[in-house]
Structure formats: structure tokens, C-alpha cells
Image (cartoon, rainbow, N blue to C red):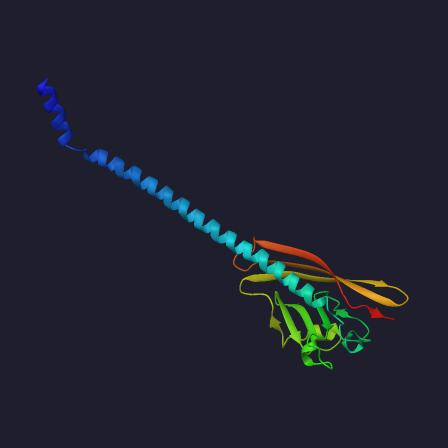
Length: 207
């Protein structure tokens, strides 16, 4: 009995063998690699989710901003009408990716530089310009003076389509605008977002 107890104690005092230590080390390394892999995957997935969330938010914000501004087109009287005949609240170019509109946003007593506006798709970005002429085809062909509304380092705008609809009666004409805006991440084009909306111009054109 005593001999058996001494043998057990002697074995316990000897500790782990080299092979046992190597096996334990190998299993620990595999477990650590799995944990690190899961962490990296989680961080990468989280980062992509944040970027896609911002993409959706930015595209929707752009459309909302355009809606709010264009809805007021023509406010201020006949001086604020555009087009070749200066008789429309909005004017769209033939490519349907640029719009010209005027409105009296600052309650000015006369038409000012800041009251003359245009929004256009330029170099995969949404751009804004003031002090423009009344004809979209001429305004939209210009390359200088435009300021960015979208972040071209984060989002590449792939599509900006404007479709005008007209409802006329004997006394007045009311215009509506369909807006389609699509964009993708500059860093990863597989992440894209598209938003469509319809806005009615508040100010009728009296015949």
C-alpha cells in the first residue's frame, strides 16, 4: 500500500512529459488562431456594415435634400421661371441628369445670383451651382463653378435620372419630378444603393 502511494506521488512530482507539453501547446495555438480569426471576421464584417449603412443614409439624404429644394422651384413670380421661353418652374437637360430651377429663398425684392440654381451629375458625383442661366442644356454643359453635394471619396454616383411629368388645365400647369439616384462605395463597388422618389412642384404655372 505504501509502495503504491509512493509510486503515485513520484509520478505526480515528475510533471508533464515533453510530448504532453507540445500537444498542449499545439492545441492552444489552434484555439488562439480560431479566436483571432473570429475576431478579424467580426471586425471586417462590422466595418462593412457601417460603410453600407452610411451609403444608404447618404443616398437617402441626397434625395431628400434635392426634393426639398426643387419643390420650391418657381417661387417668387414670373422672374423665377426658367427654360428657353422662361415659362417653366424647372428645366431638365436632354440627358435627364441635370436640372435648373429658380426660387426666392431669401425673400429678395429682385432676382439675385443665389436664387438661380442647378443640380447635376458630374464625374460620378452630385454637384450644385448658383448664378446659372435659365436653359438647362447650356447650364449643364459647363464644367466649372460646380460644388459637390456628395462625398466623391466615399460614394461614386452611378445614376441620376430626372423625369418630368406635366399636368395642365385651362388655367394652370403643375409639374412633378421623378428622381432616381444610385451610388456605390468607392472602396467596394459590390455595395450599392438606389433610391427613387417623386416630388410635386408647389408653385403652379398660370396660363
